[in-house]
Each structure stands twice: as structure tokens, then as C-alpha cells.
Length: 411
Image (tube, rainbow, N blue to C red; front, side, top):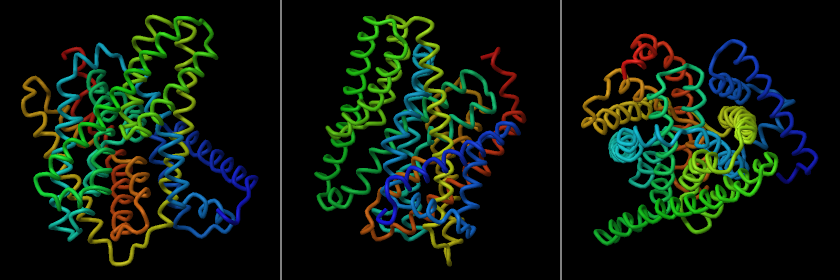
């Protein structure tokens, strides 16, 4: 910001962390999912004229600043922390439902939301499929933090976490294609379709190569040291380095971080980390993820100050309905061949397909010249708000109603 110096920005940032920590502490004391509390407090601040917070609101609601903080600073930490703890044997054992949801359900949802919003909300083809990409992923920031607080069946939790991590990479790739290349590809006809498919495959493949290579390399590096502060630094370099390197070669940074962290947390931990190192790396990333989650969700709420709501409530209602229906179709259709998959699990995966900060960050990354940017901001924010508040608060009662917690020993 032009009217803020470095000292003022530091003070504002510290105030944001303090506020986020205070709200998170109260939510945890009340045993409620803290993302919901944070986004509600942020929305209240955004809707209320607190003159003392005007500088904070003005600073946070700059799209460029928000995108940098969410995507570049927080997202690798959140993805890395979640992926680091995912046990590969269980991922491998549940690979079919995870892949069906992460790839099949994401593509089905993308097509369903895109076509529906074009014909129902009268969005342009480009804007409709950008909205579809934003809404096709279950955001790891939301899903992982809320599901950890409600205690679900272990196998179900692995599937939900696996889907939420891998399909974010899919959603980001679809977003990039829709926002910046879709019209060009449509003009080229079948040739454009081939170019779009090639770009989709290339971005994912490059993310896998970068994440796999760096994950393996840093895993080998840990065998030469038994020094947990140094190995924590190695993990920081790995998560951020894999993200930035993959993005620099036009690959998926999200997929790169997930793959690198899974390799380090399984192969690297087995061959090169002492129990003390594994414990301390886990604690470090627990703290980093809690801090990132707290600030991210508060910032999402503060973004409401950018949004004009006049005469848009009908569009908001229809937009939310489209996303809910598309998610249901995508989940049940993608898991149709999973014969031994309990219907109660499908219901929870469907209703637990929450949206969050990644969707907000991506829509804010749209250039100001994008014609329907304001409409997409409105739709995205309120889908996220509905998802966190309505779906987030009803996930736990749904788990109890379906008695999912009592089925673990039978699965």
C-alpha cells in the first residue's frame, strides 16, 4: 500500500495474528471448529465500520497481497504439514477411491458446474468454467482442519485427506486453463482441445517429477545428519522449493508439495530420521499449520469488504445450489464402481466437500480486466461462507447420525 510503511505493515500483520490466535483459542476452548469462528469474525469485521481496523481491512483486501500470502506463503506450509503425516501404505491401500474422487469427481464437478452456471446464471463460457474450477476442489485448509476436530473413521479420514490434497492440484490446473487459455482453445476447435489436454497432462506431470525428485533427494540428505533443527530447515526448503520450482517450470506447485512431503514423511522418515527428529518436525509443522490456518480463515472473512451485494442474492442462492448438486453428482458417480464402499461414507464425503481459502485466493488472482470478476468474487465468497458455516457445523451431527465412528472395526 502506498500509505503504509514497512513498520505499519508489520504492526498490522502482528495485530492480525493476535486476533486470529484469540479467536482460535476461544473456538478450541468451546470445542468448535476454529475455521468457522474465524471466518465469521472476519465477516463481522468486514461488515462493521470499525474505524480502528480500517487500515487492517484496507491492507488485507488488496487482491495482490492476499494472493501472495495465501498461495505463496501459507499454502505450501498447509499442504506440506498435511501430506507429511499421510501414511503411504494406507494411501496405497485406498488408492482407488482416492483417485476416483481426486480426478474423476473433480472433472465431473468441473463440467457440471461450468455448464449449469453458463445456462442458469448466464455467465460467459469463460467465467462459468473459471467458477467451475474454483468450486471443483475440496480445499485442504477447510477439510483437514474441520475433519480433524470431529474424529471420523480412520480409513475414511485417509480418503478425505487424500482427495482434498490431490484434487487441489487438479483444480488449480483447471483454473489456469479456464482463466487464461480457454477462449483460445475454443477458437482453435479440435486442435484447441488437444492443446488443452496436453497442457493439463504436462502441468500435472511436471509437478509429479519436481515433487518426486526433490522429495527423494532431501530424504537421502537426511541420512547424513542427526540434527533435528537442521532437518526442520531441510523440510522448509523442500516444501517451498518444490512449490516455487514447479511453478517456475509451469508445473503444478500444489502437486509438487504434496508428493515431496509424502515421500519425506514416509521414505525419508524411515531411512534418515531418528524418533526425536520425526517428533520435532511434526511439532514444528503443527504450529506452522495452526498459525497459517488461523490467519487464512480470518483473512477470508475480511474479504467481504470487496464485495457489492446489491441485487445479487438470487444469483448467490442459485450458485450455491449448483455447487451442492454438482458435488453430489460427482461423488456418487465417481464412486459407482466401488462396491464395498459404505453409503454412509459417500454421504459424509459429499457433504464434507467444503470450500475455503484456496478458492478465495484463486478468484482474487483474476486480473481486474476480467469482465465478470465481481460476480465470481460474490459467488465464491458466499459458497465458501455457506460451506464453512452450514456444512461445517453439520458434519459432526451427520457423522453421529450415520454412526460412522462405530464402523471402523468392521471395515
